[in-house]
Image (cartoon, rainbow, N blue to C red; front, side):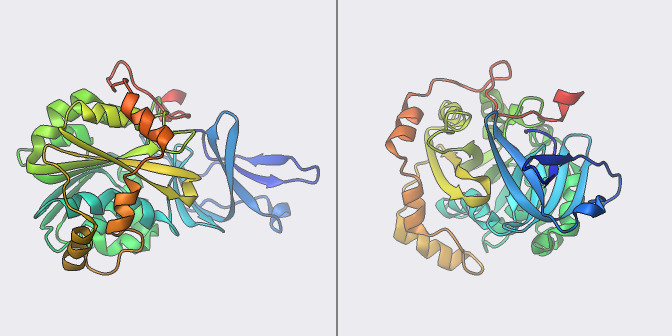
Length: 344
């Protein structure tokens, strides 16, 4: 997912000095004392000709697990942010947009959801939102990376209650293998996965064969699958969003794409929800179910905004309509960047 984390300081001639120190501790200190009066920055590569930078307060963690590069940064604009393989995954001040859109629609469109399986979701925010629903009896969260889970539990205090909830079953394993080996079925299955990047650990979980042979058989009757589907902006939706949508459309009878702007991602983001039962409730019923089922107030989502988010602009609509690419292990699309395997 992108390049390694870069921390840099502006110098007198306007060009950045790249800070690339290494650390093996859980606290990475910026050790160039001569620059303590200047801002340090994190730079994310959006594309080969586009970068996105954030002023930092501090680097809370920087290292590499068995599967991916990991950083937890404290930024001035977006608070604490989780960065994996050089890509922003979640930001403290606006993660509610992404996670409300990922979790609540599927739960609200289901008549009585009791069980959920989350693929990925190691930071705990997806589980947190799911556990707000009073119908939910069990949430299985399966993430491949123990190190990501460990430092999110330590640093992301907003999710501590979710990690301690007795309804949460945390499993450290490959989600594909875990789902395949389980006998039980789930009302909701969620893909809270990293974006498909070349060399990353997740792209096989976006393929038709996975959806058809492993995931769909694990859904209960009337079950719903939802996944994050990458950038969905006017210039970025063809990277992976349209292909993920078309792939899922080959497997399920009813498929609904929807989008929202996430400021810390510097783009519109996409999700795809699918079932063999139609999504037939309106805005008033969505609001009614939110009031009846959800603990506390949602900050972003309501019935009208969700229905609006499922209406694409003309360009994206035509791309979804005309997309022909189907994800397979041999023919996958990737967003710009590389996972850890690229450097092995």
